[in-house]
Length: 122
Image (tube, rainbow, N blue to C red; front, top):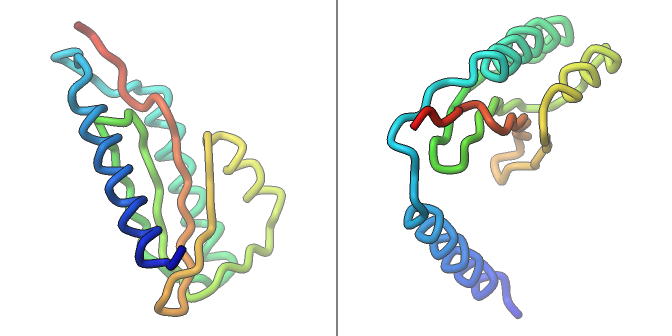
């Protein structure tokens, strides 16, 4: 299979999954899970300090996805070299998932994901 076909197949499968998720019954009111959201913000703040210590510069984006009930910290860097691995490991342990992906522009993207940043009230 060529990459173009695989990309189209993935896109259509992903769109079907999002459509399915949107069709599920939803609670009408969701609020922040304050404890989990604070963990995410504290991780972002410590990550900012850690990157500064390592002389890395990048813009940190924090997002909350209400459909999938996840919060994410995303940062694009021209390289990723962490000098204090103990602190980095401590930060990652608080998250549910993380990944480092190479980008086509030569940079790398660090994504840290926190599940259950929202909770349903109704």
